[in-house]
Image 1 (cartoon, helix red, strand yellow):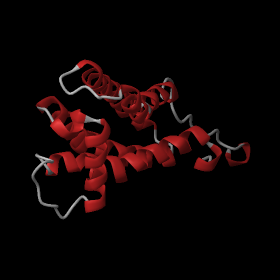
Image 2 (cartoon, one colour; image 1 turned 30 degrees about the horizontal axis):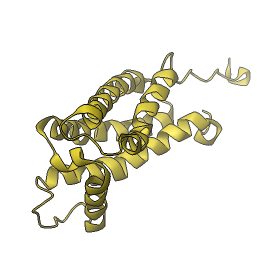
Image 3 (tube, helix red, strand yellow; image 1 turned 60 degrees about the vertical axis):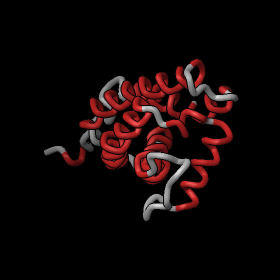
Length: 171
């Protein structure tokens, strides 16, 4: 089995999944479920207050949709917390250990992520809560458009071909 350091694309994906699991999903996104009204709240036990302050600063400065939290937005956050978070944990394991069973879940994640981000970006550009600086919001979300495409490319065939059996191991 080739080590992860010899598979640079897989290493990038593992890092992306880990950041999403540890920071984005269960800190940044979870804040939007725990705090229903960012205008009137008390700090919860989790996520940490500095994360909440950062999310609210970004929302006030650049992203009114994040602060408005309409129903469709909250549903995308629930999808992230209940679906994408567990996927990230499984994907990290599967990419490190070279498990082919991740192919279908990775393709499903890619399609769902692209759909969610494109819907959100349409609202950010043309919706009631459009961003005053759409270019900045697009740049902040570009990685979630790019990485699903990378995953689709990576999963296009059997993602982890079985290592050939060394000749000396044959009877």
